[in-house]
Image (cartoon, rainbow, N blue to C red; front, top):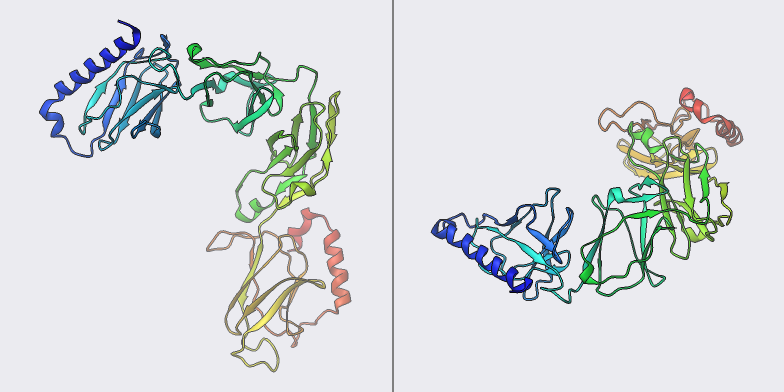
Length: 437
């Protein structure tokens, strides 16, 4: 009896034994109890070899089983378990892409538990649609160091880019069609230092080690100095709200992403000789084709690039609009008012006298004044700098300023003087802004 017939016989016997042992008791189970397929260590083989931990088991339904509804990895001790909905029918199992013989499994009473031996390979599925290649996370390195979550892995076939992606929690898992040839990988553009793979399903299981570097010499380094890429939005919330990243890319498909350090500096390594590199802050509102392009020298080296990027949150002024905010204006007429910095209008808002208002200006604006109908309607200048937390929201970039006519005893500075004041404030060091508040 061949391996395929033995597998069919073993599964049939085990399935019948399991169902017989359940008997009427299984049918009396609750209708929503899951159906469980499981196996101990050594219960899965691929081409006669034990399936390594991390091997993927897929559950398919339908006539051909290609609608995948669940998956599971073989555990570190070699055991496995699948919990399925009891109303699923035509259940097909796949191990790393090989179809498990004996399916589809049609009879699955709620609460049933089937202990199965899964022996797969070219003897039972000589023409699989695909078979998985794997690399554990600890088996993937760049210059001998573990990869960050931002690392980009690219797959090449016969010298052409085929797919790219980032590391998963368990490493790198990709389906490869049978008889694909000359498969190689790069990590952040650096080649994996191994011979290309040629794929024959009879050689499965496929577990790779992907160690990448630069066989021609040292990589080229682009970097930004401390303070180059900053996230000031954390000042508004009193906590870190995100992580900034710098992305390098070119038109040949090379791409690499690095995380900005807390001091605002960043370092990005590229293969020496890479050309047409664009460096942008991830998710910044700047199209990459507007950005200068750089070339990495073939002999290695380093080049400082100042991106001068600051992420901020809008600053909110709010308060009450006085009932008689503008002379000769009916008390019930809504008005437009402005927030200005010197002669620059930062924002406009619409509010009713006697009501509440809220207006947003760019963070860091200095010497902010408020105007309505050509009149100053606030008694001083304000700086849009983080201060004490708002009692309700905890937001630190918010300030209450009640608006009312200032003709009584608050002098209105001439526009020229306001402009001079703004210039002085803008030239001051950022570290002293809060002190002036």
